[in-house]
Image (cartoon, rainbow, N blue to C red; front, side):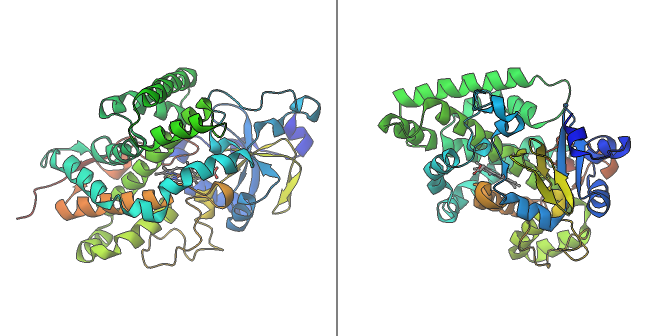
Length: 410
Ligand code: HEM
């Protein structure tokens, strides 16, 4: 087995990190691993193992390590590697699963749509969407702010950017969740098939009736030459839809939970709304919605913190653990909007650095500001310990966020 090759002794307790209390609060486990086993092979909830890297310096270096690749064929014995299908499944041509040069070509095609300047132009539209969602909420009874605000806001934004009709939005939410969560009972294959079928139909409709939105523009690129295949347009659509809302929704959810349970922080942001962007940045460091980057594979033996990860291993860069490394951030467990958050890894680092980082920051800021502005007295509707968290190695977020918004002031 791979473990015997690596010669690592994994005790049963440490081998299973992703279970139990971890889903609610992964940080004690990360602290223990960082201190005692900063490079450790652990079991994945849906089978197999991954090498988890948890120290800030290691994680940052690993993000730009050319020996850690996205091509899954690195896990196969060299003699069968070339014959193996290059891409796993219908979304194998998602750029987040690819290395250069394919990654470079695909990323260049969409990068222009997500620059900080293009993103900033969206502010009034995002504010209007946030206001419309908040207008519709009941004021004096418990409401799940995740389902009614934190999810629909980024969902509406990415759908408008891509050109996904309003009426379709409810359809792919459950599929998207099925692919992100690590429950045993979700049918990943059905979700994949559903999404693939939906996006294929949508791409065909853009061919017949272009609308000037991003998906339509990608269809035009694909018709203009061999730059982009239909498969690649479909995969890009799925990637942007999932990455564009699953993550930001939990940034908003985790941040609202933060202000609902930290009176001093809430008072501060109410008194100085211009501090919201700094608070959002600190929320990204302190409890970012992505705590582990999607998988990478060791193309050869690699060593970090004195431990050798054998060639062919699955590797996970724990940005959640890195962002709480006391060697990088002073008293990392404190949520402190005054701290210098520079260099946090919530959006990754290197070639795959989050394409949507400017958009996510803007959405987080607008969501938090609009909410506090209207409902300065909002409070949790249940004790914090009753909140349920998602079971996902990649996403750290809540299942529901029941709050009472309280009467509007004035
Ligand atoms: C990549 C985090 C929001 C689109 C990534 C990566 C991280 C990340 C850590 C790197 C993955 C890796 O290295 O394997 C986040 C967080 C978000 C967020 C924490 C919200 C707070 C968004 C949004 C979009 C988006 C709103 C929509 C456009 C992408 C894409 C990639 C990516 C397309 C792949 C980039 C590539 O492979 O070159 N994100 N993301 N993300 N993100 Fe985000």
